[in-house]
Length: 106
Image 1 (cartoon, one colour):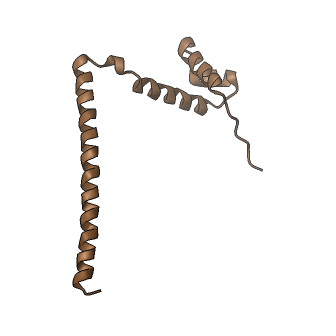
Image 2: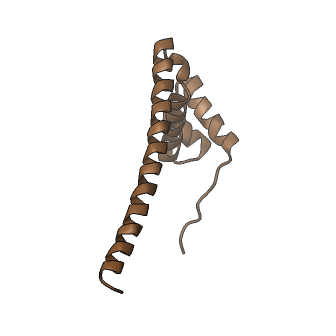
Image 3: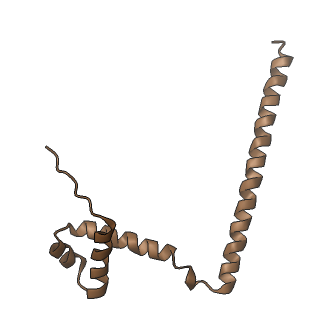
């Protein structure tokens, strides 16, 4: 029979991550103390690091924030333009199909 996977609540995960950060102990040592796999704790640490990097917009200068906002607006405009072009393409495809069908006498 297969093993059942243990699940850990978010508070436990956050506590384990905080222990590694605040004590300076190795991931393996903390994992052993908590009775969990070191790889599991390493994954939690990596996910936490990535989440912190995503949320670190305070590190941007004013000009970088303005550039980011400009690029986001431009991306939104391009997405809108793309949707319109795709719609026009679909209409042309349908009209071409109808034209060919009519020309073939069907």
